[in-house]
Length: 543
Image 1 (spheres, rainbow, N blue to C red):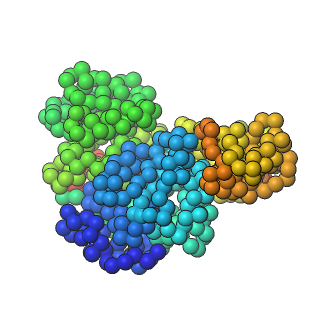
Image 2 (image 1 turned 60 degrees about the vertical axis):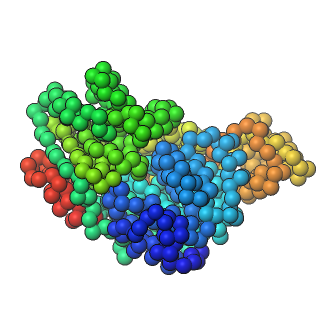
């Protein structure tokens, strides 16, 4: 889609409060104005979001933003609505509410933004149907926090790897709109993988000249044992009482040093603090985010998910009680302090025991041939040939390794995905004769009221059936009576020894790469070099 005027004139029209472009914003925007795509590596807090926002406002088109966190979606949505855009943020909504909201979305009246998670992009067939139908109105696709794409292990978001296939199905392999992959930093290995996945080249990388902000004062502190480290945390929090701090800690399951245990410990000492981890209810996480933003909460004890992309400018410090898995992860997390440009600090508290704990966490990502075969057998090894169905949204909750292998099996050809859509037919009610006939023809061929067996008995094409179902629903000839499921329909092929060997090698390389990066980071911590200079120098060579 051709965008009128220039980035500078669009900035003046839509964001008059912004005096000028910062860092590499204009270079990236010029690429989008020329109908191009790019990967943007810029520090946290210097305005990566503006790069995807401005083209959508200027073109009065539609922007699709793929974001990993519900809280981040909602925060961005509030700002964009205040600037005059229509925004639909599909975070934690149930499928029925989401589909009703999608039907009201102004596809022909921008500027408008649709925020979705990578998991919803991969499993929600109605979103795929609508994007394909309205693809000419879409100005760009923004993949936020793009470093999530190339991970493997305890903090991996497997659905990110499925995004190129999603874009192919919506736009066609050669007709993608402008694409932005946005993140703060990547090592060379991950950068190459993401460029390959999204069909970009090294010439499409736009990188900041100043990766580490100058207002951050970094410190690495090494202690003999955990009690000494805990004493240091006591003193550090006392010194900065009343300031906004993030403390990255162990998972909630750690009874003494997990997010919830530490929050209890320091609440008893009079700190206004809360835990934040993935298993907390969405309403509790939203409340913590809001209270932290307005100062009601001063300290958040969090796992790595907290703070990703969150625009809270006055965080004065980030404390690492748990050792990050890499220099890049450390940089992503410590960069959440001082986004207002005022002095801020990062304090990493380290013991030798931490090294073993984190190394064991990384090694846990390794998979043997036997484990991969067992996962295949557990998920797909039984039943008759033909169309199968699975609901990744529910099947893989808390099982990221299985989720990742589900996509890996597709890449090897062991699974062939046919369609994405609802399996439960009874969630729809016909409002026209055509829709009534469509549903009745399917229901009389299934005792379970499920689409997959009905299609199998009629020897129909599942993709065409799902397409017709969505056309009837979108036109109002069918309505939802209850929340639909999000099902992936597929055919099982053979998982060969060669495929398994390929996956073992792929996973092993990722784990070894993570271990190497971790060991280099530990060496940096224990080198007694100036942390700020050491991190800046290392980042300048790896990004």
